[in-house]
Image 1: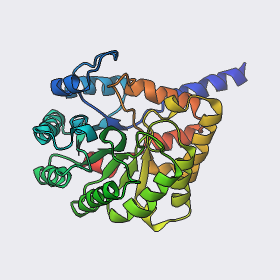
Image 2: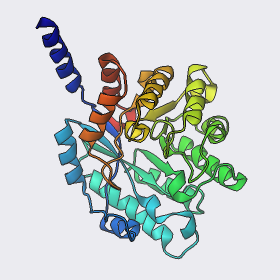
Image 3: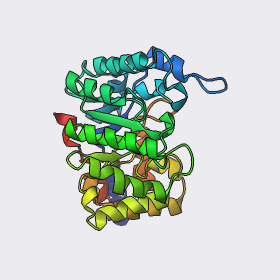
Length: 310
C-alpha cells in the first residue's frame, strides 16, 4: 500500500509541473482570419490578447511570446502585389496593440517574408517602434528556400540586421518540401554566424513540419560540440510531442533534448490557431509522453527567455 501511495504522490508532483512561459503563441485579427480562410478547412475565429490571457490563466502560465501573423499576408505568391506591405505593417501593428494591453504578461515578435523587398525596412520599423521584443520568421509559409542562393542572401541580410538591432530571432526553418540535414547545415554554417550576439530560437524543436531527426541531429551536434555559431542557439517545443506521435520518436526527442542541454529548451504551444490545442493541453501531452524525469521537466518549465521580462 505504501508503494502505491508513493507512486500516486509522484504522479501528483509531475502533474504540478507547469511552464512559467509559453514562447510560441499567436493571436488572430479579423483581417488574418479572412486571409487564411480556405474552402474545406475549418474556419478560424478571431483571437484577442484578452482571450489568450484567459487560456494562460487556465494553464497556470504567467508569460507568453505572441508571434505576429503578418507573414500570412506575405507569401511568395504575393510578392510584389500592390498593398501587401501595407497589410503586413497593419498586422504587426495590430499585434503590438493587443500585446500592449498586458505588458506584464505578453511580449510581441513582428513578422514578414524575409525574402521580400520590404523585409529590411519592416524589420527596422519594428525595432524603432520599440513595441517588439524580437522577430518571427516562417520559411514554409513565406516560400523561403535557403538552398536558393538569392533567398539565402536575403535571409542572411535579415539575420545580420536583426543582430545589429539586437532583436532575437525565432524561426520556423522547415521549408515547404525537402527539409533535412542540408538545410540545418546551411542554418548553422551560413545563417547563425550572421547573428552571433542575439538568441536564435529554432521553432518546434527541429524546425517545424514533419519530424526531421537528421536536422535535429545537426543542431544538437553543433551545440554539444561547442560549434562557435551555436553559442546563442536555443529551441522551443511547440507541438513537438504531438507531431512525433510514437514511443520511439518520444525517446529520440528526449535523447536530443538532453544532448542539447535543458537550459537551451523553452516551452511553446503554437496555439491556438489552425486547430492548435491550448497551452495547457500541449504541455500535458509533452509532459505525459516524452520520457524526461520530473527534474528535467521542471528545469524546462522554469526556463524563461530573457526578452520575455524586459
